[in-house]
Every structure is written in structure tokens, then in C-alpha cells.
Length: 111
Length: 115
Image 1 (cartoon, rainbow over the protein chains, first blue to last red):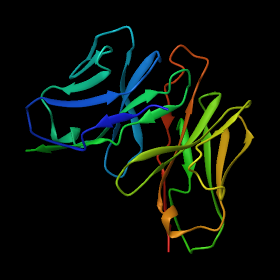
Image 2 (image 1 turned 120 degrees about the vertical axis):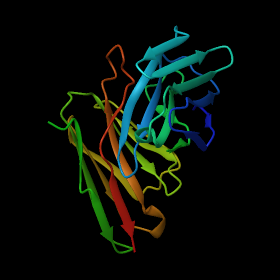
Image 3 (image 1 turned 180 degrees about the vertical axis):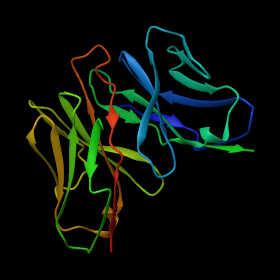
């Protein structure tokens, strides 16, 4: 299966941009994912990027994919206190529909 | 009109008991999953199942068994509960055959506490 790495913590000030990074070992999948988990809640699909894209923008969210370096990032512009959550990168195993999740990055937004 | 639902939301039980967690999806998906999230929030897949195959994470003890009465349900049965089983268990589903076939939709989680 995949090995997916993320830093565990990120702290930013309200209004600043947040960048959450993810690296993975191998993937031939069509999609790569970001999930968000708010305190005490389940996982919510936040966004995804098709593997033949370098960038995808969705309102305040920008996903960047560098396939050569196997690096995925999620940028949140104008970070708000409501963005405080754990963000999981998820990558399918090569040739499989099963997802491997990173350990999650806990984003803390300081008012 | 919840897409993926789980019951119960909270489960507190004694060591050694047997318990089940239920999961239902109304998305018409072919594949369902169970994940375990530990106290450090690390998420690990336990099982994936569709009507053709069951894939088991080899690290999952055989005290855990998924049971699927039909395509819309995948229940998790746990025998002889241990303290280390305390965690949040998430059910998920996906439509494997779709263009975004690997997109998984998660239930709200079941918080299991073994005393």
C-alpha cells in the first residue's frame, strides 16, 4: 500500500493563508483527496484533484499537485477560525480503490 | 436524507463483551469500508467490502468481523472487546465503478469506549 506523510500541526493567524503539505510514495490513481474533520465530527470530503492536473482552485481552496515529486498541498486563503480542524490527505493504493490516509494535520487558527 | 449513517453514535461497554455497530448508505454505492481512528486521530482502514470481495487489513484482529446483509449495509461485529479497542469507528462508502470511483463518503462515526 501507499505511505502518506503529513506534518501533524500547523498554526496560523486569522486572515493569513494556510498551506498543508502531503507526500506519498507511489500512486497510479486518478484522484487524490483532501478530507476535513472538525472536532467531534466525521470526515468530510473537502476537495480532490485529478492526477493529470497541476492545480485546482475552489473558492478559498487551492490544491497543488507535483506528480514528479509526489507532493500534494492544500492552500486555504484568508483562513478563518471556522477552518480549525484536522485535514487528511488521502491517496488510493496503486491499482486499488482503497484509500491510504495521512496522519492528519491539525490546523489551529489564532484569532 | 443522511448519505452514510451509523448507529450507535456512542457505545460504552465492559471488557469481554460482544458488540455490533451498524452502518447504512443510501447512495447506491457498491463498496463499503470500516476505519478505526485512534486517540491520536490516526485513521486506518480495517475492511473494504463489495458484493464480490472482502479485503481485510492484516493487522485487524479476527475478533472483528464485517457482516453485510445487503449492498446498503455493512455492520461491524466485535467479539471479546479489549481496552485497546476504544476508538472512533467510521463507516464509508464509494461507487467504485464511477468516474470518481474512489471518492469515499463517511458516516459520522461511532465512539466506542471499553471499560
